[in-house]
Image (cartoon, rainbow, N blue to C red; front, side, top):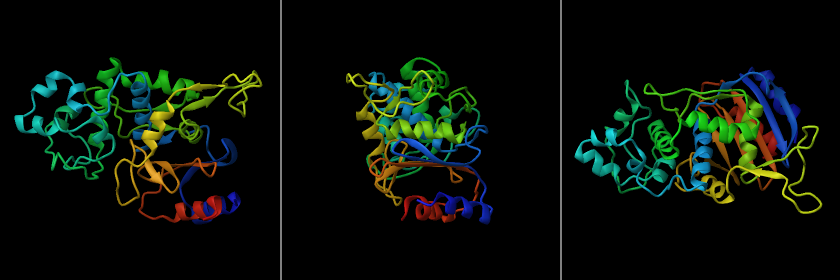
Length: 307
């Protein structure tokens, strides 16, 4: 691993990278730039945050991913749907939306009532699973989760996900009608993004800390007592990070992308968290590079991953 060569590429090429962290075997080994102070746009990594929130509810039996999405949405909005649209949506499960396997949905919700807009969308081939990336899918899952848990989803994420992870610098946005917008609009620091990545890297647990606040580097003490806090079940982590829908990028899980032997959280303008449990490596970075180039990724793979 040649982290200095990677950061030299960033500086020499003027790539707009806010900060980078590299973890080896669960411990921070390299950092660059602003990783702890500034909160930066995550764009679609917000969907992976939503996936973790869904996982908490799933583990507690509050939401069934195989059930129809309409079962969890407000009845007054469902009643306003046309018979044709309702019949199509009745074939769509929560899992179908989380795997982006619903054709026809537009990229983003619009108007003053995003839920009514989303439920008025025409679904193409509702019986067939085909990859179609849409923020509408994530928005609908966020609304469904809000109804399933019976409380504000933003507050739920703050208390049940962010607090135990030690995430205290964040911003998020809402739809015009007040729902947590699960598709985009969230901001975190680089180090806090890494905390989310480590949750999945560690199979759903957070390592406990000693009296000095340092992370304990093992999962059990000498007596065999568990030294971790479990936030997500291993079952959900495996479900969320395995390929459930194929696409040209190599596959998609539950709002999480397949990446080589592991998986990744991906944002619009090169916001990334690459998680490779088999290799014991995790790389997080937040950027604002608004093009379709792959030079930053290629440099990271060459110098950090040794590919």
